[in-house]
Image (cartoon, rainbow, N blue to C red):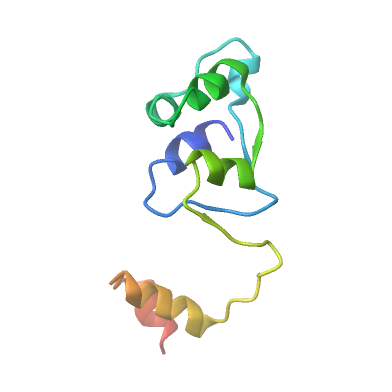
Length: 105
């Protein structure tokens, strides 16, 4: 929502669940979307970006996936990730930080 949406829409992997919400509440107050959201909303297929940018509509996870704001959809009931799963994700993206190194100890 708001500024967080403007930052996160530029990510490579944008994961949504059925509990995810995308909205720009500043639009309801008469302001315009921030630059991050404006950039991405203007590039959505069809007129969906214009609709979301002018109305401030709240979108759920399925709607985010359908219009391209999310790249992946995962059920929120899938909440169990142990440390080995997290480490394998870090290895896939070659993230070698001190936090990852310390987790292996």
